[in-house]
Amino acid sequence: MQRHIFNCSKGCPVESTLQIISGKWKSVILYHLIKDEVCRFSELQKKMPHCSRRMLSLQLNELETDKIIEKKIYPVIPPKTEYRLTSFGKTLIPVILEMEKWGQMYNSINS
Amino acid sequence: MQRHIFNCSKGCPVESTLQIISGKWKSVILYHLIKDEVCRFSELQKKMPHCSRRMLSLQLNELETDKIIEKKIYPVIPPKTEYRLTSFGKTLIPVILEMEKWGQMYNSINS
DNA sequence: CTGTATCCGATTCGATACTG
DNA sequence: CAGTATCGAATCGGATACAG
Image (tube, rainbow over all chains, first blue to last red; front, side, top):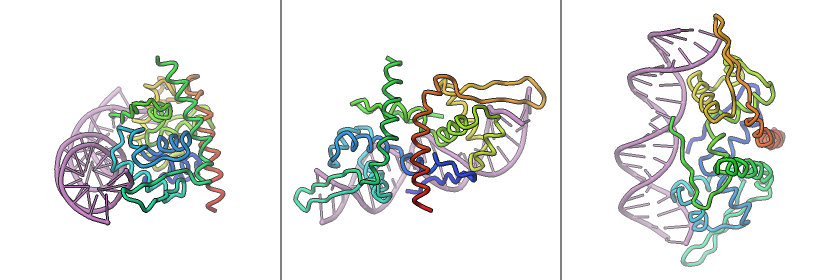
């Protein structure tokens, strides 16, 4: 999946962050991994019913490539995998939590 | 422009935030409006040279619809407009600044 | 200067089928 | 269970032209 290049000539730091978390489902995935620490593929599917298996897979792969999350594969049948934040990925926690906070405020207004 | 509906059944607050700021250039626009308070259309264009006039216009319109920014039109020739955050839009500042912080950290690592 | 309208190629993403 | 491969419809977004 080709990712958009922002490349603001003045170098806006926000764009670097976007580069990493702007995928359609990435911040939601990160949110759940913050709340639950560890998630299996199927658990993430349940938490994000509107995200197709294909999309979930693509987004997880990109996050893994960017060293934000890591995957642990158990060589059992049926297969079992676990996803969790890397220590680098954990540096994103304040960003996601700030998004959560704003979302909660927003939801409380619109209800 | 049709926007994606996230609608996680469990109600993840992060999705509400995404609904508002996930447009291709929105958080970058917000970033500049935080730094500069007020920007004209052409100023934003200069700050975001990779964003076409069309896209800039679309993103600004959506942000205005969502009451995040407000536009002031001066009835002069040639036309002059100014964009700034609304007081509601300013509640997003912590989110954007947290993104900026992470982006700065990320850039300092990768240089 | 500050936009909008239209065209059209490029990209996205769900559906489906398939694999270990 | 945990994915990947492929196809095609829908959407996106740049280029261009036009407008107040």
